Length: 71
Image 1: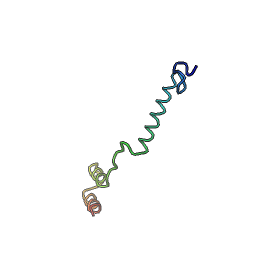
Image 2: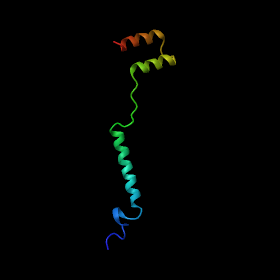
Image 3: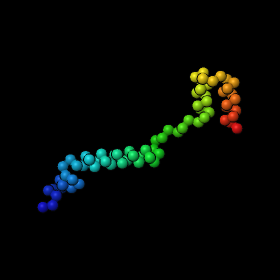
């Protein structure tokens, strides 16, 4: 009598649900650490444009910093 018709394989019963959950967790963790679906970081110029658009800096400050960034 080995395995009771396959039910004892990998722990038996509903143990397969645990294996699927563990596999999904491993995939999720690897995807996060290996760089899957990461957004590209904003460039300094994009941040500067947003600050100017919000009115945080005036045109003179915007132009000065933009020319410094483009060097």
